[in-house]
Image (cartoon, rainbow, N blue to C red; front, top):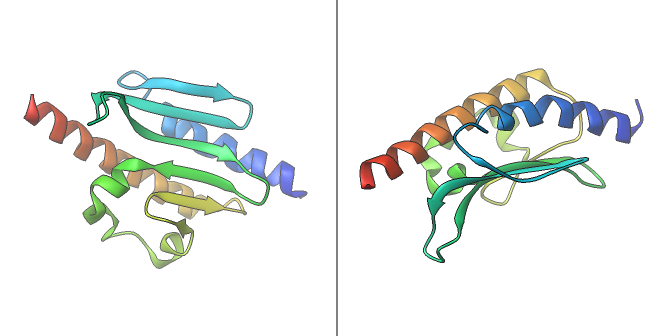
Length: 124
């Protein structure tokens, strides 16, 4: 499968994971190959906190998840295979469709959202 078709397939699997949180979050970008969500919570700069996004890049599909940066303890149970896909503190890059990693990202996204929501609803 050519990289673009593979990347389209990966994006098609990852976007719905992020999109499941649309009812509580706000779409920042929803373009071909790029999908970002922001939270209703304001950061120190008075701008909405970025939740995450999925984007097709030249050599991989990136899955950004800011709660991983904010709550690094949620990474404690992440597999070594997923950790190998990390770039930086909150981004995962996939080059091949791997259902195990996608399922793990879905669980990580759920846990990250729960941590974020708990912190901000408790603070209000």
